[in-house]
Length: 225
Length: 234
Image (cartoon, rainbow over all chains, first blue to last red; front, top):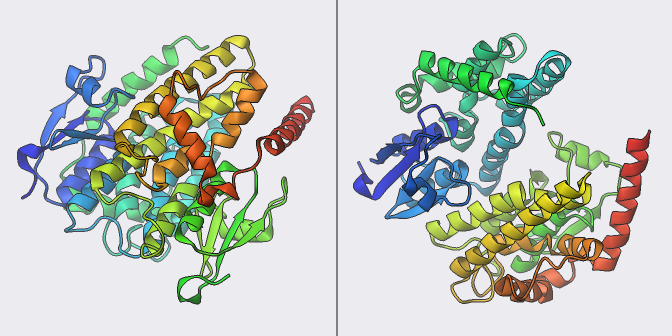
């Protein structure tokens, strides 16, 4: 085990961005101190270490903060070189970063649209989300993971779709994860969730469903500008 | 043009795009020659659609026949493939690298959208808010410059680095916005370090030939605005 008291992670139990950092730490066997944040009442430490957007996750290494989950994972991979998360080849690295960016730029916003939309907007939003699933399904053809035989950077970043997308489907009553339409992607979900570092580090499903129900209700009840 | 090992390097792009400027600066820093394939505005070429089917956007770097997309991903790729040539784009220390990467994300996700939001604002209120956000962002970036440059001329130290490229590519559009609003965003009094940096960046050999002239950009912007107005009027 490496790390110990020199590594701290500020997080929130339901957040997929926080979990993906934890998965990276677990894959490398890095010991860390986890600090749970109350998002409605952020600690002075969190605000001190991330004054820019005051969000989790924040990784603290030897007292220095690193922000943004994708940036944190690359940092972890560069400091602790064993069990590499990013491939060695520059082209493969570019592809890993590409799909990670795709997750954050396209998939997250598409899923968010569906989660909060109603009526016609919902129909349109589902089409957009399915388009992203199609692109991911195509990319996975012939592969077990985005990283190949083992999980890598894009798997960790896209990992929210293996768990939180299913939760969203339940909370907002929609269905997109169809094995007939997206056989490779749904198969990836199964394989991903079987990886020990992932399986042992997921939030409890019932609690997560409950949390996102409240989150959705709050958002839909808020006065619209 | 052939690069290391004789593999061809092509870049699909367009002269007004700040995103296209990024890999061009990176290739210049590495002294790598490339063929620049200019896309016609409003028409996506066959090659672009084939090389970037997911986003259908420029820039796309094609190296030894393989396409790489997304400007800052391309910059990192260039830094890694031609690590032995020219100057390093990302710093060596992992923490410094994380700082460069974080601020680049901030610039693309938060800062530039507020800048482009100024011209898109429908009300005076929205415009004022966008202006405030741009200033607030520049203040943060001034502090970031002090931290990253460690007394040297660029975010990357002695030479242009990842974060210089990420922010510097927007200088042309920043100048256009200054001209259109009459507001001086890069102000000696507010952000003196960034003012000095901006001048050094634009004067650098790696940037000079690829930074579009402000007047040319203004003309292009007017054409763009007219097109959008016409499109939304239909």
